[in-house]
Image (cartoon, rainbow, N blue to C red; front, side, top):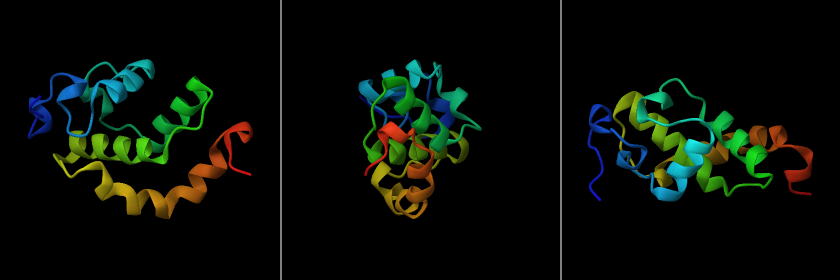
Length: 106
C-alpha cells in the first residue's frame, strides 16, 4: 500500500505513514475516523486513552507511532515512527506517571 507523501493526500488513516490496519483500528476506537481529525491531538492523551480503553498497557512504540502520525498531519513530517523514540523516552517518566495505577510497572 502506498502511503501519502503529504497530509492533504491522506484520505484514510491507513494512508498515513507508519499507520497500518491495527493502529488505524486503535485510532478508530478512540473516535478518530479521518486523518484530519489528528490535527491538534495530543499523542500522549491518545496513548493514555487507548491504554484505558483496552485496559492494557500498550507498547511504548504505539506512542512513538501516534507522535509520528500527528507530526505528519500537522507538519507533513513523514519520518518513521522510530525517529520519535528519543522524544518519547525523554518524556516517558511523565507518561508513566499518568497511566492508571493498575497499568504502571512496579
